[in-house]
Image (cartoon, rainbow, N blue to C red; front, side, top):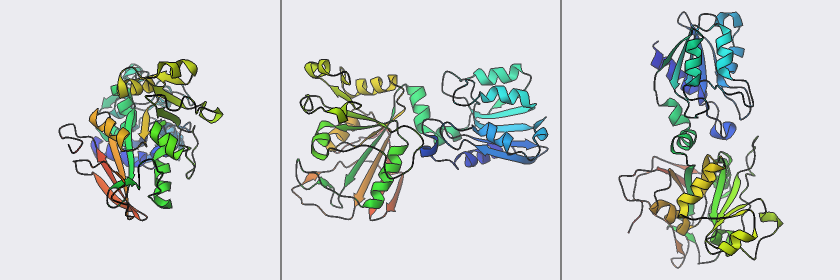
Length: 347
């Protein structure tokens, strides 16, 4: 097999872990090959656990076989010692003859440094420039390349495209299976963002509850331009982050920040707090604002079988084709990706 085939296999190995398990770490796969034989594979199982390269080495039946072998890894090995040791240092000590990297790590702490280090250690390193790692880790790449969080919009609607039976009323639309799926989506995000209208009407917890996680709960964020929550703050909202244009509100609480330049300033502020990804669970007005500002990468719509009154609150109808659509219980889940060449909204 050639390098591209081995790398494609490494990507399949990486995909054994889901984005919930690895959280803000990228999904990475590694394969150790010698004399045309695959000796071991490994992948990054979960946030804070051993990396793919280490797991591949540990999976060797005879660890001395790694001498003069070739290691294929979907992402440039890490260079900085964090929760685990730097993989580049370990590889240099193992006696690997050649390392084939799918793509450079976009994180400036590692980008190019591991490749240079391994070459200086006398190891042949080839970078293929494949897109497997980007496909596996869209939020990770977006954050480090664009210096903004990856934004996923989420909306639940009835079969006749309404989100509530009437203005100002909380309406349950999807079933439990869809709710669990939403929590899976939440579990892979660094933050969950809503508007003040959703906060006042639904009073949501915005926590991950239906799926197990081994990482912190997402940061809870509210956009409250006018300061409608100013007199409704309590102990429960102390660890929420609120953005407003109300200067008095911002002066009153440490966790209330001014949003000087609209939604972009919100995302910039979140990026400065190392927030890699945001799930926007607001109503149609907030979703529309993100769409019009073109500050989104993914849009998920849950369409239930139920019917709501035509006097209700209309949903947001995107004018582009979904990249995937499938049933989750009694709900149709459609996923859209941002195409900057078409209009996002019906006028």
